[in-house]
Amino acid sequence: MGKKNKILASVFIIGCILIVGVAAVIKGVSNGNFGNDNVMYNGIEIDGVDVSGMTEEEAQAAIDKHIADLISRPVKIIINNKKYIDTTFAELGFSNDGDSHVAQAFQIGKTNNILESLFNMVSVSDKDKKFTLNYTLDKSAVETFVKEKCTVFNVRAKNSKLIFKKNGKFKTTRSRIGVKLLVDETVDKIISVLDGNTKDTSVEIEAVVKTKQPKYPRKLLAKCKDMIGSYSTSYSSSGASRANNVQTAAKYINGTILYPGQVFSTIKVIKDRTEENGYQSAPEYSSGKVVDGIGGGVCQVSTTLYNAVINAELKVTERSPHSMMVAYVDVSRDAAISGDYKDLKFKNNTDAPVYIWADASGGVLSFKIYGEETRPKNRKIEFVSEILETIQPGADIITEDKSLPSYYRSVTQSAHTGYRAKLWKVVYMNGVETERIEVNTSTYNAEPQHVTVGNQTPVSTPAPTQEPKPSKEPEEPEEPEETKEPKADEKTDEEEETKKPKKDKKDQEFIESSL
Image 1 (cartoon, rainbow, N blue to C red):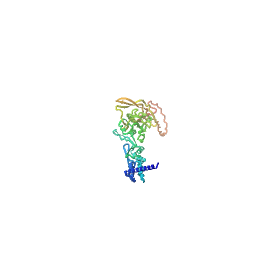
Image 2: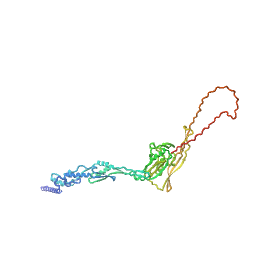
Image 3: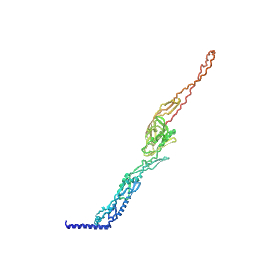
Image 4: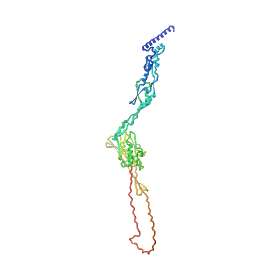
């Protein structure tokens, strides 16, 4: 390049600088802060806050207020669309990282060289004049808040209760839906909404909850309002102990609620037959005999309940006949319970709860079963016992007791006729038989009469020995007289009168009534 060309280039550069300088001066003058190094140059923003023309202190105050406003923004946590918790960004751990960028922003365009200042003012882009603050969210603070203040609104599901009133009507209590707040899911949701959020003036967040419907809501229990089956038997001839057992077992059953699909076990509900549970010793069947046992008589309770159950047409899942026939119901209408191997069980096969009412008083045992009546009004049922075979008891079984007198005779157990039988359910529609269904078959053992007789061996007692009398002095013998012929009507020997034995007393029979 020639000398002339170098001079022209230098002049061009200087001219450009002068033009830029003049433009900067014009711009600075127009913005009012040219040459004032104590304020922010124009166009500087910190986190969206314009700090142009502010001193460093004024800018710091403005940014501090901005940060305070951001972290104090309201947050509302909504739980299950009903409960609200008011909080703030600050309480949930939202904060500035401590770097306000005020000092850095204040240095933009500042230099001791006026030409450099003029150049910086022109060359700094708008992007470089905008600062973004950094915010953090403390996850542990969110977790603490959720656990301590949100979970208090957890509620358990509450079932409705069925209350039987004296007038035979029912009352139901309110049920409640359970609500459980899911902590981890709610914490994650809050963080996703709040982390880095500097735009929203307020926030509403729906907590993550899990609802649980009550197992037995009020609507379900309200279906139980109709008496669907009943039955009664008499225990008026029972002794005090047996009557006590009937009343005790009935008391345990009274008020039982059987929900749809549930199975009722008589053995479980009436509890163990022990004195601690209120039972006493009374006659009961055991191995074909009538013996005394704790809880004797409770089979009348299971039998009466069985008949109420079949009248309600609930599903019987287990039933056993007695070993011998009982007197308080017809054949095949009984239901024995014994130990843990004979039980009366039935299932609520309806869509409504079943309530069992029981009463044993005045010598009458009664059961009423309540539920929802869904059977047609023109449909009626009855149960018919059919004897298939009669089995005679046979000859008496005699037991001799040598400790008892021979005239003793006692019936220790009456005879029982055996049977094979069936129970039928007969269905009528408008008074006409439409169906006959076999309900059960039963076999009852025959048992002879048991008699105890006395067989005591009599003991003979010898006559007492008399003391001998002293002999008299012998006298001179007289001449013997002539022996006379005995007269025909005279007796030669003394005859002793024979006494006839007294007649035996009439035999007495002692009969124990069976269950």
